[in-house]
Amino acid sequence: NVNLSDSQAKIAIDSKKGQLNLFPLLRKPLKFNHLLMDLSYQFKSKPIFQWNRFEFNNQDIHINSMGKIEYLDNGKGYLEISTQLQNLDTAHTSDFLPVSIMSKNTVDYLDSTIKKGKLTKANAIVRGDFKHFPYINGEGVFDVQAQLENTLFQFLPKWPAAKGLDATLRFHGNNMLIVANKGYVDDVPVSKA
Image (cartoon, rainbow, N blue to C red; front, top):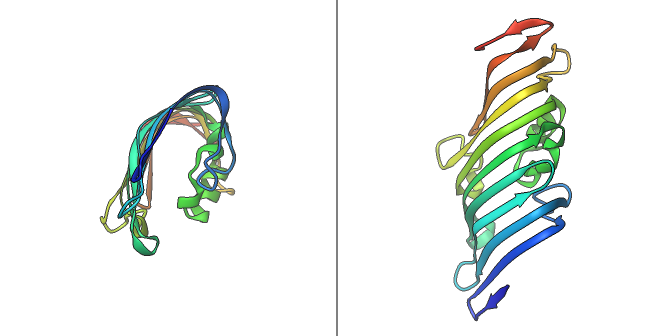
């Protein structure tokens, strides 16, 4: 369903079995079982792209999101995004990383560290000016909290891997915190670490 006026476009999508291409944000198109979206794009004085509902699911993940992006002059802009993810097989983590807004070092690190397991749920909030992302000086909010189960996590190539890891993972600004509830490192049990 598409509605157009001289200042706005509204799009509603309810689709089954297809692909969603969000390149360059994501590396490759994502196959979906069900996609439900309510989008609007305002193109008068300052363009605003807004989604009041984005629901995506396939065999690997379920995503719910809402947010808006305001585009200002000279490539500047403002983000306000809230997203929830559930039931991600962590072997597919790299398919869902927003690579165009993350540093190459962060992307490379995440690609090489999370080997297998399950992300049972995650919540992400991004709010602030484009140019200050990931908001390390408090100019905005970048906060991701995730629950991992039975994960194989390779912190660094020469370190022993954490196996069977149940943990809470948090990205806040440019910091990462992992709190392990249980797991093993070199066959040594780890809990509440």
